[in-house]
Image 1: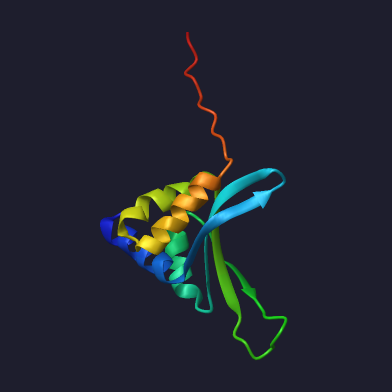
Image 2: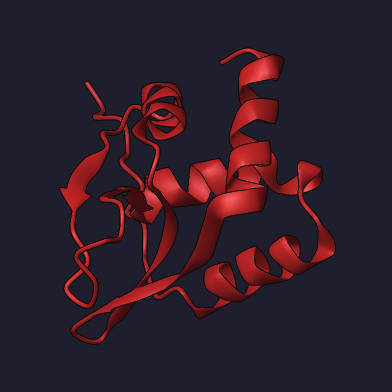
Length: 116
């Protein structure tokens, strides 16, 4: 990923993103989410982080609302994005990332090289 791509991701997620945790059973996983009515910026971000854009979704409350699209990263991929763009974000976003990482109960198994 080029520096300009990291800056693009940071800018889009600073303005439109959400950094939090998602609870599945007893486990909390870090999550990065971005929801927009314009799929093109999300498609560019999805390509950079090897993900996909979900949608279109339609509002149940008001049929006049534009359809919206969502990009969502969880687990290790979310952590990677959070840590990559961390230094470029505002203090408020940095706090949201710290809170999400601290609350996460995600555990990683390290693989040992097989001895021959």
